[in-house]
Image (cartoon, rainbow, N blue to C red; front, top):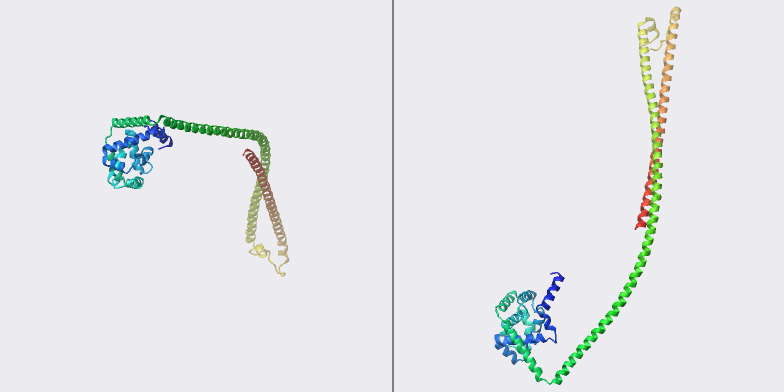
Length: 409
């Protein structure tokens, strides 16, 4: 059960069920309950009532906790729960049923005890007996079976009040007034003490409230100063943010320009390399064509040489000039010198043209390598420029965000 509901139940029991009346006016109503219990014992358990009179055991000596605490002081909780349920259903008169049930079930043991034994029995042995749930259920069944009418309780209550009035009338008026005066003086002193305590508590609370108010004002001033400082820091942070945004924009623009410049250089170098590659491919095609033409020309010459009987005497199968003996005729030498010289000139021209072609090819390859080297350097420079500007931009942004985050926190 939540605390609020438990407190509401307590208030209901204290005021609506009359439990609060037991604690008022020097427990006057509690003593009335004791008288009612003794009269019920006299009716339902006469022998035990007589035994208690013999040993001078009065109801307030053993039943005060039953009424004031609703049996919660000594008995187990599962038994107390049943008693409180009956109390909420039937009213405070249930206490008499439970008390009579306890006395009836313990009558045989109590009849054998004296004054001190009876008090010890109520204090120790009686609560132990009802630690068993079976005994507790039997007790609750017995308590419910007892029929105690409200008229009878009202009758005993009137008897008690009449007895108290007779005692008051038989008592000396002076003593009664003195006792009443002492009671009123004690009440007056108690009220004055309570008034002093309340006044002291009021002064103390005022002082504490004043201190709290001063502390609150100091905290408010400190918070206002801190708020102003925070606003100024916020303004500075916004200005710094704008400055960093401008620098970031400038850096982005510079990076864009550098990237555009690098891209243009790359495109330019790519076009130059493409031109050189095209030239080299054309030279390679031309060289291949020239080589194939030279081979075809050489093959034709070889075929002509092979077809000529006189030329076969001067050239071997590999196309080289043979050494002729000095004993040949002078007429044949004269005829072959012109052809030989012609063939040598043609061969020299072809070798010269082949050497020039090879030289051009080597020069083209050197230029291509040089261009590729320049292209690699340009790409490295562009990549380095990209990384440099990118890193600067990133570091500037990180610095700006870090500074702003620190100032904000």
